[in-house]
Image 1 (tube, rainbow, N blue to C red):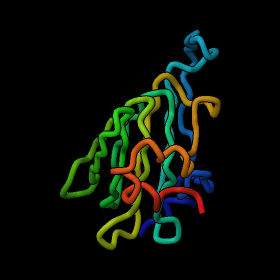
Image 2 (tube, rainbow, N blue to C red):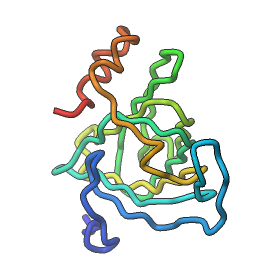
Image 3 (cartoon, one colour):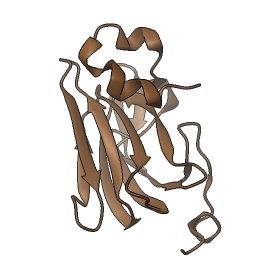
Image 4 (tube, rainbow, N blue to C red):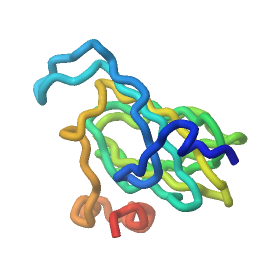
Length: 154
């Protein structure tokens, strides 16, 4: 496996795995919650040392594109409680849209050694628009608890 961490200059991510912001649009949008860049992009990597991304949500839409490795499984939860599972991998999907306001988490599956994804966030990412899930956030979704609990922070 290529050393994607060194090659791309990735750093540990609070969600799990590794990342580096690769793009921030010079164009700014004026939103009720404050100005945001029109778009941002990151590289995001899961490895056997960091095989899981924590459950979180953003206010913005996020497009995920598989670059290398996999398969990865994304588990999503829509505001109406609909649970989704999508695999990104060489023999699976290569693209995933997670709409703003949906919870999401990711993990390596089927013995994958790594999964490198490019993410595009629009409007652009801002930490004020991001939150990690807690046990209390799952209370309203009893049918999804078993699927989502492993992605909560320890």
